Length: 275
Image (cartoon, rainbow, N blue to C red; front, side, top):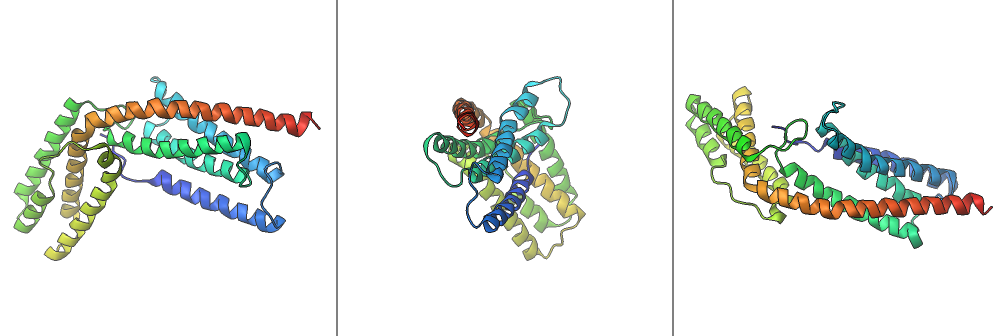
């Protein structure tokens, strides 16, 4: 089973946005003012941002629908999808020269909506258990993985000579997961994981235990068990939410790109043909 345990694509996007912001600030200082949307810098950053948004809209979807394709894992394409989906809209925002009148304002509003919707979709998507290639795992397979993890965890506890460690492991173990509400599914996982890590480190410090190979193995087993039990508890809810999200997100994306193409054609017309 493949689970997303890092936010590396978000960190890459933040780094890229900071670099773009530094370049934008340099241009502002150089020209002593906000770059015009019709200027060389404004046009360049707008075109590049739109191309990134177009890649966001098309490449990941094509890879997901191409069952025979083997060009990269779905997890990598999802990372790229999220990266371009953040960096592209930010570049388009800088292209506007902070003016949101007319159709350009509509395009920017739809862009903000689609980015927010994308963040929500990311958390719903990651709530579903998947293989490394992005295929959803069925409940029966998930149950088998849960039983296997529980067997490994019980074997570890039987071989451990430290009663304090066994007690801690039982305290952290998920035995009776509850169905999650939509809000908890979206916003509760990060808080729950943070609370777990904080409790784990505090208890290890109390017991005077060093993080060695065995303790790290126990931690990985516990985290895997938590993830599997949580996914099992929220599987049906996550699937319903993902279907609803697609029904909302896809039409907004189509409206965004329709408005963006009209804006681009109008900009070319007024900038060239009417001169």
